[in-house]
Length: 105
Image 1 (tube, rainbow, N blue to C red):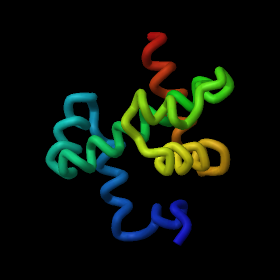
Image 2 (image 1 turned 45 degrees about the vertical axis):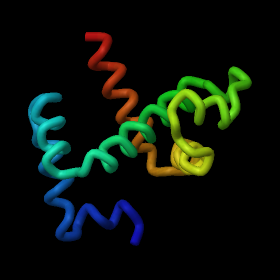
Image 3 (image 1 turned 90 degrees about the vertical axis):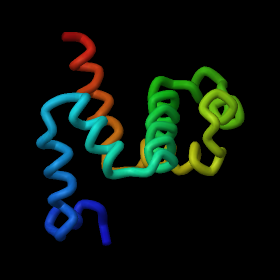
């Protein structure tokens, strides 16, 4: 099933709940309750890898191995994140834009 189709399934309430949270603390508390520590660490790691890739780490001649060394992510994870950045739904990019806009305020 395409990820865009999930908007209409029974799990869409989870995504509505996340977007309904009002603060960073509320989001953190919710995710800590919802996820295991390894799940949270994996998501945090993927986000860090995506940020590094988005900010041009590969254009700076950094290799997957260097990104792996800095983040602890496997090269398979880095490759998967890179595929999402280059051919995904644009979710990372929208998140980065919103975070960057918030930081500029």
